[in-house]
Every structure is written in structure tokens, then in C-alpha cells.
Amino acid sequence: MAEVLEFKLPDLGEGLTEAQIVHWMVEVGDVVVVDQPVVEVETAKAMVEVPCPYGGVVTARYGEEGGSLPVGAPLLTVAVGADPGDARAASSGAGGGAGGGAGVGAVNGTAVEGGAESSGNVLVGYGTSAPPARRRRVPPSSPVRARPRPEAPRPAPEPAADTTPSRAGAARPGADHAGVPSAHDGPVPVISPLVRRLARDNGLDLRDITGSGPDGLILRADVEYALRAAAAREQAQETAPAATAPPTVRPAGAGAGAGVPASAGTSRIPLRGLLGAAADKFTRSRSEIPDATCWVDADATELLNARAAMNAGSGPKISLIALLARICVAALDRFPELNATVDTAAREIVRFEEVHIGFAAQTERGLVVPVVRDAHRRNAESLSAEFARLTESARGGGLRPAELTGSTFTLNNYGVFGVDGSTPILNHPEAAMLGVGRITPKPWVHQGELAVRQVTQLSLTFDHRVCDGGTAGGFLRHVADCIEQPAVLLRSL
Image (cartoon, rainbow, N blue to C red; front, side, top):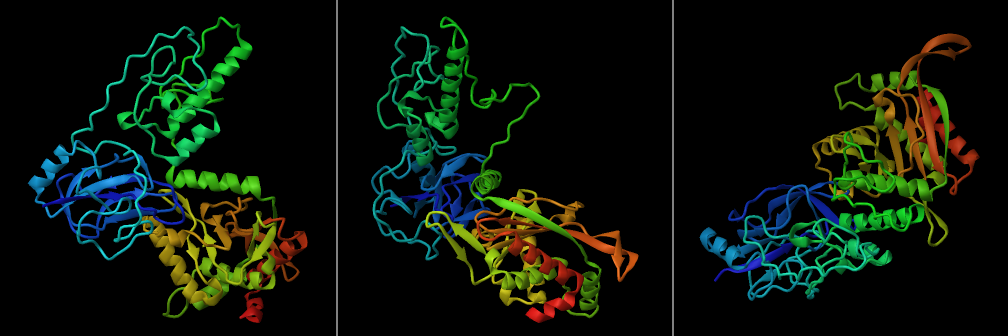
């Protein structure tokens, strides 16, 4: 007899709370084998292909391409030991539910009933053995191409005596015109703990909000629109007579947010996935870290000559960024204050013994910061190979979350964009970032005479809590000296 197993979206690492579905790799009715990738998702850190630890026939999929699912939400169901025909019948007979009937197992939620074989491989957040039972969540949507779950009929809204809706009953598409929500029984159609917390912190009753998601699912956007509608009403009541009608709330995605004027020529880009993670990190960095920037011009002619000499033979080529990284390692060895972070909770400066260098890489998906681990143990050849490998993986979208975290210092070569200088935002929670501008011919006084030299501008942004300007200036000056006279590096090798 076939056993229908529910596979939930696992925690893909680093405490991620949700993932966006980029591309489904299987259809309902397809036969999958153990550990076959079934969906490609985008997290706040990387693109990941999620393998299914069970083999069988796909009976249901949850979520559409472009939509987001929280960690722990149902991803798909697989009928183990069934042929495709039986599986399709099972998906129809289940009424769109997954994991709700007898004989239905769970991969990373409720314990599996039965002895279905599974993969020995384990993703972060789920395993092949059954963990303790967890409280079931409301599925985010009906399975794709499966019969939708029947909804309980809702009673018609009662006529309201007051046409002004309350803060908790913000007008939403599908609610009554007076802004009074319809009462309904059963669980609140929301699965994200972030949405619940947002509503709770702002005093909203989720039962009074009509969800715009599939099957009335309440999304974060619904709560935010309710809050904006309430704020708009309060502002209107303060500036207009009491008899003035409340402002009309636009449907989700159709109107402007609070403080943003509506215009027919505007477009909206959701801050989610990699873009949202970067926005959150930049905001946190600027709000938490008192940063400062100092800069200096350096003559890079001798460094370029040294690199040309290194690459004159037939061995592996040495990249410029690898030489810059090696210089940073030498400077951090002399000024360890900058290879650190601040533990705000303990009010302590934490200095690192190891040097893991992050570097900014521009990709089609946006800016990512891969990490060269143990840079202090690598020579120029090893650094060149690792920078090349990570850059290729970043552009192909194949970086693992572990390759995007754990840096202690960041090297930002913005000279590739043809610019000279910048005041970069620190890669939170790091304490320093070195920026390198373009190397370009400029007039320069060399050995007492005016000459044309290859000049670059260096900028160091640092956390003023970990050191003062003297330390930061000393670090930057040492980097500039090594660039101008590469032989200075011999002292630290």
C-alpha cells in the first residue's frame, strides 16, 4: 500500500526563516528518486537546489514560482510505493491536504507512520529519522494541480453602524465596504511567525484581516497594509473634519506605501531574497556601527611590475586581488585590532586569531560577499586559485551558504567599475573594510622628479569602537607601503 509522505521546507542554514521558490524541477505525477533535486529556491544568502530524501510519485506541490515559503511549511508530498496512476488518485482523494490523514508520514515534522526507506543524506533542518512531533501549521496554499481544500462557508458581514473602520479592522480586498471583517471559525490562516509577531506587536487581531494569499492566507504584506491604512486614517482624522470619509485603501500592490506618492509611472520591487538580506544588513550596519573612513593615494607601479614578473613563467597566474589580500593579511598581523568585531550584548571587543577575507563580487542576482577562509595560511598562488573559484561559483549562483558567511575582514575592489574612491558600508559585524579604486596613470613625484605612474586610491572604513584613528591610519599606511614597495612584504613572510 502506498504511503504519502510530507516533505517540509528545511532550514537551509544560518537560521534562515524563509526561501523564495525560483523554479520547480518536478510536476505533480512525476516519479522522483531518493535525493533528487525537486525545487530551486533562493534564500537570503544563495540559490539552493533542495533534494527530496524520499523516492516515489509526487502527489502535491505547495507554493508557486516567485512566491515565498517559511521554513517548516509543506513543500511537497510523495507517495512511496505507488505507481503514477495511484498517486494521482491519492492527490485528488486527499482534497489537497498533505500530512493530515492516516498513514501520512512527515520528513521533518510529525513522525512518520510506517517504515518507508529514506535517504541517508541530511540537509540542515531535517533528517531521515523522525524527530519529536511538532504542532502542525496551516499549509500556505493548495497543492499545484490538485483539488483545492474545501473552505468552510463564511457568514455574510453584519451591517455596521459606524462606517469608520477600526485600527484592527483595516479595509482589505475582499472585506466588506465598511471595513468590518467577517467573522469565521477555525484556525487563523497564517503560518509565518514573523507575521504573527508583527500583528501582535502592533495590536492587530489576525482574525480581523482578510488574507490576499491562496485560500485566504494572511501574508506579511496584508498586515503591513492594515497598519498603513490605520495610520492613514489616524492622520486624516487629525487634519480633516470629523465628517470627512476615511481614505480608500488600495489593493495589495496597486497603491503607494506610507509617505510614497502614487504615480502611474512607478514600479515596485519586493525587498526579499538576496536583495532584502543586503538591505537589512546595510541598514543594521549603519544603525549599529559608528564607522569612519580614511584614505590615501598609493603608487602601484612596482606592485604591477612584481606581478608581471611572477606571471612571466609557465606556472599558475597570480591575480592582483590575491596580492592585495596577502598585503591585508600582513597588515592585520601588525594591527590585529581591525580583525575583530564588537559583542554589543557583552560590551566586549572580540579579536580573531584567524583571518577570513570576504570580497565583494557583483553578479546578476546582485552583490554577494564570498569568503576566502584561512587567508593567513595561504600563499599568493593559493589565494589566486580560491578567489577564482569563488568568483566563478558566485556568478553561476552555486555558492553554498557556508561560503558566504564567517568573514572577519572585507576587501572591496570597486576599481573594476572604473571609480577612484568610495566610503563603503561595513560588512556587519566586521570592524574594517579596505576599498581599492582603479589603477590609472597619473602624474606623480617619483625619486624627486615628476613622472607618470600607476596610481590608486585606498580607503579604509573602520569601526571606531575597536580602534582610534592612529591605528586605522597605521594600517592603511602599511598597506600603501607594501603596494608601493612590495619588498616590504618580505618582513612578514
